Image (cartoon, rainbow, N blue to C red):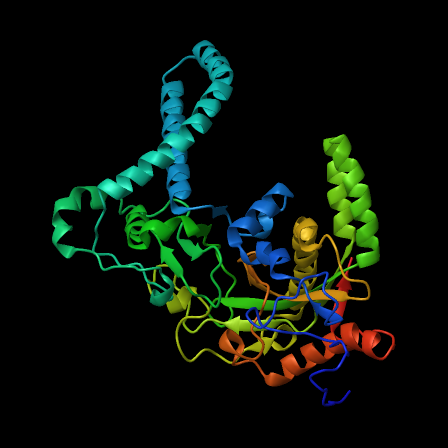
Length: 437
């Protein structure tokens, strides 16, 4: 490989493009560069946390991410319904304790008959409760002395300080909503947020209502993720950054698209599902073996309000990032995490593969996309996806502390796998990239 100066009026077509999100956005049907990233329109679903959660749920893979709600309003409505269900169950248990065996059997039969009707009523009431919560948030803002620690105030979309003078007048309502959330703390994240920006942590309904008011009209752009009990490394939470390479198989893709068009004409759900499976087969997935471990800046304490405890991008003096293979995790855990990360990556890509494939690609063009998968490991040793970055930071931003040799190898392996076979006609060399079936 080497550099050669090219005249401005040359007919040569550039071979390779590896840009930032703002650097370029080449249509799939344009002639050059010959090896380039997928268009933005086909990777946007990966950056959107709400969309990613919805696609994983549709594919029956919701366990790969923390429990997620589309908005603060939906989360609060779900908590209200759950609370009512628990109260009903407690009342039934108390009533059953006072009844004889025959009456208990009769009540159980009645309950079984009424259960489907009650579930249907609850589903029908959900939109109304969401509306009530929004109206209540607009008309009766809840103010409290508890602060919700913002990760990036500049990304909060015009937040304003709370009016302390109204706190006393709302003391009764705030005290009733200051109860800890039954499932533990939650993270409120901008659906398209990057670099750890616009992330908030809340532990009570009061904090969520306060945050909803501070976000104002932009609150609908935020999702709620349940905090997952974490595995700790030297007493701190840690995040994994895995690099996943997606390579559409264009010849196979054209074949699958023809089949999909025929199957969609007949409209049979089974054939449509088969078409989606075929689209998944038209994408090759590689995971690079150099998985980066990013340790949080402060020791973990679930009751602490310091965002540096809970969010990897916050705080100062982070421990130096290391590769998974060089971390202090035990060797069997390292192997398990690596195997899980591979399975998680291919399952996530297959769940959205029908969105990644452009409808038309210029002949001779090779498309690829290098993704950053940010994951955590829960207390049971299970790898959980937090978010996907379609333009991951390379030796800058949140990755500025990583040894530059890690990214030198990553980009070199990308060139040997994707670029040199097109430029020089040599066989592809995967290097550290491992293909996952």
